[in-house]
Amino acid sequence: MTRPEEDVLATAQTRGEAARASHDVVLEVENLTVGFPTDDGLVQAVRGVSYQLRRGEVLGIVGESGSGKSVTSMAVMGLLPGTARVAGSVRFDGRELIGASDAELTRIRGRRIAMIFQDPMTSLNPVYTIGYQIAEAVRAHHDVSKEAALARAAELLEIVRIPNAKARLSNYPHELSGGMRQRVVIAIAMANDPDVIIADEPTTALDVTVQAQILDALDTAREETGAAMVLITHDLGVIAGRADRVLVMYAGKPVESGSADDVFYTPRMPYSLGLLGSLPRLDRPAERLTPIPGAPPSLVNMPPGCPFTPRCPLAREVCDEQEPELAATTSPEHTAACHFSDELVGVEPEQLFRTRVTDTEALAEFVRETADLESSDLESRDNAS
Ligand code: ADP
Ligand code: MG
Figure 1 (cartoon, rainbow, N blue to C red):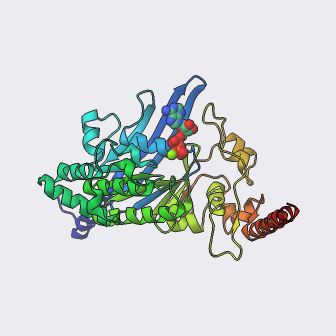
Figure 2 (figure 1 turned 180 degrees about the horizontal axis):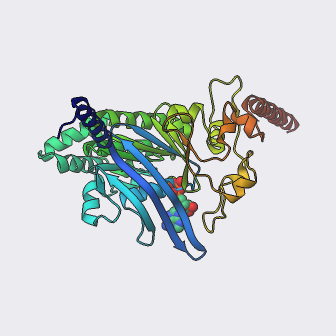
Figure 3 (figure 1 turned 120 degrees about the vertical axis):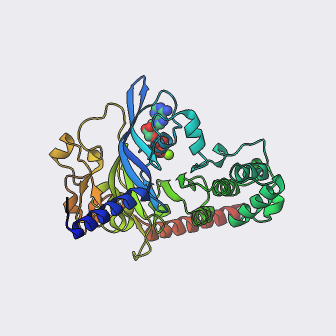
C-alpha cells in the first residue's frame, strides 16, 4: 500500500490539530437540562445548555436573575438536590461527571474545579480560623508541615491583598468584612491550584468599590494558577474587558454565544442588545440607560415559541410559534437564537427599546432641584420656630 507522502503528512497534521483542539478543552457541557418537579409542574430551569471552556480562558455567562445560571453550575459540580432531573453531558478533562460517583465528584470539587459563590460563607467554615482553612487546602496538595502551610496561607492572603495577612490568620470568618471573606475564598481556590474556577456572582453582594477589588483578586488567582474561569453574573459590566467569550442566557437557555467582541459590539439577539443598553457606557455623551421592559417568563408549563417574545420589539407571529435555535451568524463561533437576528445589524439598544430612557443628567438635575426645595423648606420652618 503506497500513499503519496503529502497525503500522510496532511492527515497527521489534521489529526494533530484535532487532538490539540480537544486537548485544549478542559470543561465541556453538552445539551445540559435540569428540571425540578414541583406541585405546580416541572420547573424547566435549564433547557439545553452547551459550552466549551478552553484551558486558561474566561467564559462569561450573563443573564437576568432566574435564567438558570446557578442551576447550570450546580449541575456541573454535581451539587443539585436529589430531586433534580439532570440530563446531558458534563465532561471535565475528558471524564463524564453526570452520573459520576460521589467519591469521584468530591475528588474533583475544590481540588480541580474551585467554586466561588455570591456568599463566601457558603464555602467557609465558621468554626475554624481562616489560617487553618487555607493551610488545610495547601496541605491537601503539598506534603508540608503545618508551619510551612500557614506561612503559605499568609502569602496567599497577601497575594489577594489582605492587609496584615499574618495577623489575620487567627481570625474567624465572622471577624472579617464580606469583601475580606471573599478574598479568603479566592485564596483557598488558589491553594487548591484548580484547572477551572467557577465564580457565580462573586461580587453581587458587595459594595461597588469592593467589587472592583474582588475582580482584581480573581484576575490574580487566574494568573497564579493558570486556571480557566467561568464567570457568572447578571451584570455585563463585570465581564466586560475580562471575558474572552460570552454566553448570554435567557429562560434556561443560551440565546447568544460568541467572542466578547462579537457579543459586545455586534449582538444579534434582542435580549443581549437590551442587556447592553442597561450598561453604563463612557462613550455616550450623557450616560443613558435603557432598561428592558417586562420580566422573564415562568419556567413551568412554558408556551411554545421564543420566551423573549412578550418583551421583544422585533417579535412577530413566527416568534410565538417557534422557539429559534442558536444559529450561526456571519462571524465564526458567533451564534444567536433569533428569527430576525439579521435585523439587528448596526442597531443601538435605545433604537430597539424605545422605552423609559433614563437620562442620568436630567435625573441629577431633578435631585438637585428637590434638594434645594427641601433645604428652603427647612429654612422656612427654622424661621417659623
Ligand atoms: P440564576 O442563577 O440565573 O439567577 P437559577 O439558576 O438560580 O437562576 O434558577 C433558575 C430557575 O430554577 C429559577 O426559576 C429558580 O426558581 C428555579 N430553581 C432553582 N432551584 C430550584 C429548586 N430546588 N426547585 C425548584 N426550582 C428551582
Ligand atoms: Mg444565580
